[in-house]
View 1 (cartoon, rainbow, N blue to C red):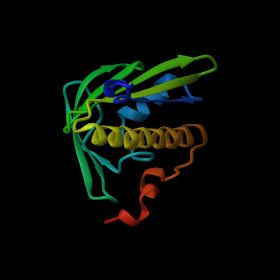
View 2 (cartoon, helix red, strand yellow):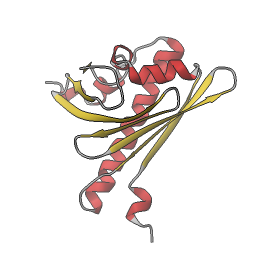
View 3 (spheres, one colour):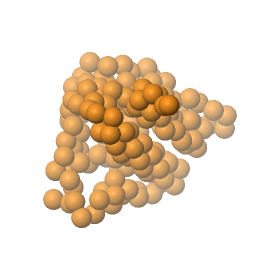
Amino acid sequence: MTNLNDISTVNVGMLIRKPVDEVFEAFIDPAITTKFWFTKSNGRLEKGKQIRWDWEMYGVSAELDVKEIEQNKRILIQFDDDTTVEWIFTPRESEETYIEIINYGFKGNKTEIVNQVIDSTGGYTIVLCGLKALLEHNIILNLVADKFPDANV
């Protein structure tokens, strides 16, 4: 039987054909991140800062604490719902970067946790696909906004 702890962590990844510093900066700098994920932010990610991200099309926001920043290697944040997200950036040959996103700390009963893991897995996969299109092809796909077109406020 599978233990809930074994399935309560999201782990998604994607190869981005751009140098690690460019991929890293896409998550640090909201001027870039707003092209593929949230629509508004009150600042760059910096260790020790509290940041607010908004998805204005849905009337939703999240507060997060930036716990760790290791330049071009790792970002660690904690959201206001106590979930933790970690980005790991691994440079590869030919100016490529493998980015891995790990999300954990979900709360609730087993069904609620599994549903949160499913939603988060899909959400972070969409974020990585949007990032790939933006950095590799300079295309803004509007994936996050188009995921729930009838939920717009």
